[in-house]
Structure formats: C-alpha cells, structure tokens
Image 1 (cartoon, rainbow, N blue to C red):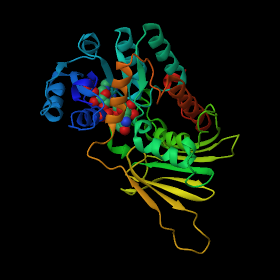
Image 2: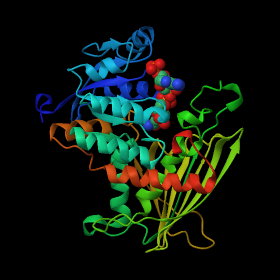
Image 3: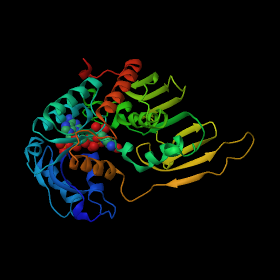
Image 4: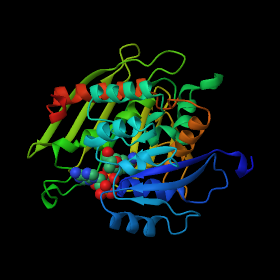
Amino acid sequence: MASSEIPTCRWGIITTGLISSWFVDDLVLPRPDAKARHVIQAIGTSSLDKARAFAAKHLALAATQPALYASYDEVYADPDVDCVYIGTPHGFHKRDCLAAIAAGKNVLCEKAFTLNAREAREVFDAARAKGVYVAEAMWLRHRPMVADLRRLLYGEGGGPKAIGDVFRATADFQMYIDMKALPATSRYKNLELGAGSLLDIGIYSLTWGILMLDPQPPSAPEDPKIMAAQSFVDGIEVTTSVILQYPSSGRQGLILSTTERRGAKPGVIVTIDGTDGFVEVQGNVPSHPEAFTVYPKWEDGADKPQGKRYDYKQAAQGFIYEADNTALDLAAGRKESSIMPWSETIRVMEIMDEIRRQGGTKYPQDE
Ligand SMILES: NC(=O)c1ccc[n+]([C@@H]2O[C@H](COP(=O)([O-])OP(=O)(O)OC[C@H]3O[C@@H](n4cnc5c(N)ncnc54)[C@H](OP(=O)(O)O)[C@@H]3O)[C@@H](O)[C@H]2O)c1
C-alpha cells in the first residue's frame, strides 16, 4: 500500500517525561512497513523550556515541528490534534483523560489506565457520552509476538498446540529503584500518584498471565481466583506476588513484581509450561520481550532439549504497534480498541483492585 493511502494520526503529546520520549522516539523512526503515518502535532507540558528541550532532543529529524504549549489544556483545544497521548503519572490519568474527553479529543492513555476500576468506568462513561475514542496504551498486547505465541500455544485456526495443554505461566518484572535517593514527590514514592510496583510494572506480569492463560476465543474471558501478598518499605509497596487460578482449567499464573532487585538483562522474563513442552520468553523486562523459544518436553535425566527460537528484535522499542492500531481504529471510526477494549481494561483494574485489597495497598483515590 502506498504511504499516501495509509491513515495519518496527528498526536498531541501530554508531558515531556520518560514514557512520552520513548513513544515519540518510536513514532518518528522511518519504517517501510508502517500501517499509519504519525505526526507529532503538539506537545503539552508544565513549561515551555521543557517543551523546547523535548522537541530539540526527540523531534529534530521530524518532517514537521509540533506546536509547543506550556499547558495540557492548549493541546486539548488544538483543532489539529486527532488524538491525545497521556503520559502523566497514573494518579493523574483520570483527571487528564476526562479533560481531553470534555474537549472532544480521542485519547490513548498510558498504563495503569487509572488507579482503580471505579475511575476507569468513570472515564469510559465520559467517552461514551462524548462519542470519542479512548484506549489504554498497553503496548505489550499489540506486539505481533504475543499474537504469534498465542496461535502456537493454542493452535488457533486448527493448528497443533506447540506444548500440549498449557497448565502454568510465570512472569516476573524486576527493576531496582533506589527509593531513598528519590524525593518524596517522586511518582515512585507518592501514593496520590499511584506509587507501588503492581500498577507500575506488575501490570505487565499480570498481562502476560492473562494473555497466556485465558481461555482462547470463542469462549469469554474467565475471572481467575486470586491469592496475593504485598510487602512495603516506608508505606510503599515494593514487592507483589500473586497466584492466579482459572476455575475451568486449573491453570495457574505466578505473577511477580519487585522494585527491590535488578533482573538479568537480557534474561528469561516469562515461562509457559505445557504437558508436552515449555516456552521461555527472553528480553530485558516483561514489557520489552525480544524473542521466545519453544522447547519439547524435558525428559527426566536428560539435558535441556533443543528449542526453536523466534526472534522479534528490531530498531523501534515497540510503541509503533499500539500507535498504528490506534490510527487504524480512528480511521475506521471505532471508539474502542479490539486489542484492549474497555471491558478488558476494567477487568485488569478489578484484578489489581483485588490484589491490592488482599495485599494492603490503599490509594487516597480509593476512598
Ligand atoms: N508503557 C511503558 O512501558 C511505560 C514505561 C514507563 C512509564 N509508563 C507509564 O507512564 C506514566 C508516566 O511515567 P514516566 O516514567 O514517563 O514518568 P516521568 O518520567 O516522571 O514523567 C511524568 C511526567 O508527568 C508530568 N507531571 C505532571 N505532574 C507531575 C507530578 N506531580 N509528578 C511527576 N510528574 C508530573 C511531568 O511532565 P511535564 O512537566 O512535561 O508536564 C513529568 O515529566 C505512568 O503512568 C507510567 O506507569 C509506561
């Protein structure tokens, strides 16, 4: 398809923080296989100096330069912005989504979508009433690797199941954060901003568990039983461990996150066990998978069997997939993402609400 035939999405980027820089870096990379054209139309931030520095660092090679605003509201009011990308700390997602929706903007909002399921419902109700598109930017779900792996595991389309019947998945997100060195205002320490490993990184382990263990279509997603524990340093949750158990199949997920230790990079970030073999997913952390290897059954007393490796490493980090899919959704007039529909965001938030209820994390916004 010629590039003139693919849809164009003009983005309004909210914040100049880390995730906004990663998102923008990916979008401006030239790609021969792009399904959409992305224009960074506007940047909204707390100061014009930050906006200028961000544009100079991340958009120097872009074909067009964005409008720079020292507020978020000016981005929402800009008629040339098709979709707002929200990269504030998750404690502000509800506020920022509602403001963008009130201005009639479509929204792609970072994870965790909100702090709890109640806030998520509020945002989707507002989007429904206003008739705009809203989606959670859970980029992992948009990676082609994930769809390929599910097809291999579950034999979608009538193919064989690569490792027999899946009975377990383990995902562990490890990231060291030196809490003592951070100011009290940091999003990693401030409960109002959503501090805690679960919403920050455990959500990826949970997503892997759901993606690998959920009953496959056409049956509806099933709510797993949840057993959870959380540990705290100075009132902030730093380690979460969860067992998911699916009632119909007995499949178990071991869902782990901690900000107390660094993991091997690259290393095995997810394992999936089946009755006839196993899969190891390699990458730096569960949000950045790069490859997976499918192994046959490891026979007792034998060396580790030879596996078949599938590589997905590329120049971009991987935000292009969610961005392309958002642009395609908007071009088609859809209000929800089929990959991350509203019901699924609410389901994930409800699971995390229950994990926090059992583990003891409470945010001021839960009241
Ligand atoms: N998808 C992923 O892999 C991924 C990775 C990292 C983070 N995230 C998500 O993205 C969101 C932001 O994370 P981040 O790591 O980019 O955070 P960050 O680097 O701290 O940036 C957050 C930005 O939000 C704005 N902001 C407004 N009020 C703030 C406040 N009171 N405290 C701190 N920042 C404030 C600031 O931008 P301005 O001054 O420019 O307005 C700040 O630069 C979080 O929800 C996080 O879960 C996603």
